[in-house]
Image 1 (cartoon, rainbow, N blue to C red):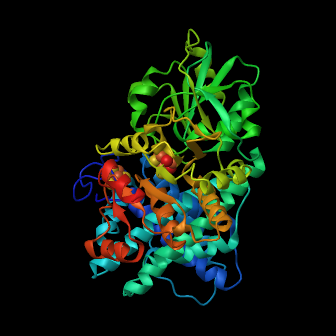
Image 2: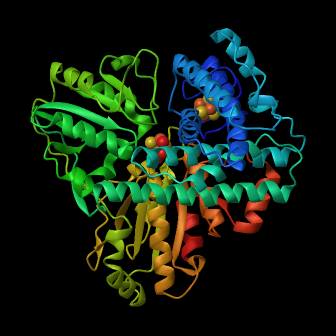
Image 3: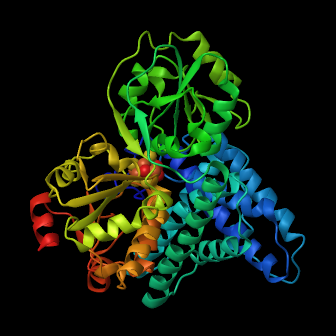
Length: 535
Ligand code: FSO
Ligand code: SF4
C-alpha cells in the first residue's frame, strides 16, 4: 500500500499499515475502487455528451469516492461490493453510449476474489501514476484528494434531496481528468482551482439542504454534562441520520447526545425541538477511543471519523458509507438495533453538570446582527476577526490552536468551524458589546457559511475580502479540508496560515507557487503569528 492523503500520514507515506488503522488490503481495494470509479466517470462523461444523464451513476460516483476518504470505511467486504457495483453500472451505461472506444479503467474487469482484487489494486495505486513531472503529479494528487472532499459534500446534499447535474458533470470531468498525463502546470493549477469552485457549489447545495430541512441555525446553548437515563451517542456529520434517530427514539426514555462534528446540530430549530436531544458528549474524533469506551449507551457513527472500535465493538453501529469489520452496519432508515442496544445498556446513572457551550452562529444568525458587528468594527471595539477552524487530529503541534485563541487579544473575535474547535470550544472568552468573542459557525462544510459572512462584511465595508480585518488560521487533517482550501484559493483569499504540518503530497515547487500567488504560510508560534497579523 501507499497512502499519503491525510495529515496523519507516516513519514514518506503509509506503506505497511495506515496510521489511521487502514490495512494494506483495505488501502489497495480503495485504490482499485477509485481507479474503476474514474473509469465510470469517463463513461458518464461520454454518455452526457450524447444527452444521457444517469442519476444512479451520479449518486454512486459520489458515494464510491467518499468511501475512500480518510476514516470512513475500513471494511474490505464493503469495498468488494462497491467495486462490483461500479463495474456493473459502467457496463450498463456503456450499452447506451454509441461510437466511443473506451480503455483503461473503463474496460478493466475485476478479479473474482479479494486476493485477485488486491493484486489489481496494487497496479493502479497512487504510485502507479505515470505522470513524469513531480509538480504536475503533486497537483493531480491534490486534485484527487480535493475531489474526495467534494464527493462527501455532494453525497450529504443528495441525501437531503439536493443534487445538481451541472455539478455532477464538472465533478466527473475533473475525476476523469486525473487519469490524463501531459497536463501543463497551468492546466493542473486550473483543475485544482476548478475543484475549489465546484466545492463551493457543493457546500452551497448542502447549506441549502440543511437549512431547508432543519431551519437556519440560531444561537443555542448546548449542555455538556450527561442527563440520567439511557443514552445514544451520534457522531459523524449527517443531520438526517440524527433526525431519523430522534424520531425513532421519541417516547422511549432514551437521551440522544451529539459527538464531534454533530455539535452544531443543536442550533437547527427542527433538530433542537426534540426534548430528548439532551446535549453534547466528548470532544474531537481522535479522542473517541477513550470517550466511546466510557459511554454507557449505544454509539451511531454516521460518517468519518471512525477509529478502531474493538474495545466497544458491541456498542458501536455504523450507517451510510461508514464501515468497520465486525461492527454492525445498520440501514439509514431503521435504527432499531441501535435503540435495542441502548435500552440493554445501563445509561447514565445521574445528571452531571459540566457547563455548556454555544453553537449556531451560522451566516443567518451573524448577518442578523450585522449592523452591531459593523458598528463595533467602525468604533474600534472589534479590532480583528480570526477564523480558527478546520480539523482536529492526534499529531502533536495542535496545541498551537488552543494557545492562539487563548492569546488572541480581548478586542478580537474568533469564528470557528469543524472539529478543530474542540481545542477551545468550552473557553469562556466573554463578549464585545454583546457579540460573543467565540462564534461557532458549524461543521467543516459550513465553511460556506463563513465565506458568506466574510463576503457580506466585505460588501458592508466596500472592500475586498483580503482587505477585511480578518485572518484565516486553519488546521487540516483529511480531504474535505483539501477541498475547502482549494475553494478559498479559488475565491482569491490570501494570507492563510495552515498547520499543523503541510500536506506530504505538496512538492516544494507547488508550495512556492502557493506562497507566491496566495501568500499561504505554515503556522509558526501563536505569539509570532499574532504579532505578524496584528502588526
Ligand atoms: Fe473533523 Fe473528521 Fe468535519 Fe473531517 S470529524 S476531521 S475535515 O472528518 O470533516 O471536521
Ligand atoms: Fe495513512 Fe492517512 Fe492514508 Fe490512513 S488515510 S493510510 S493515516 S495517509
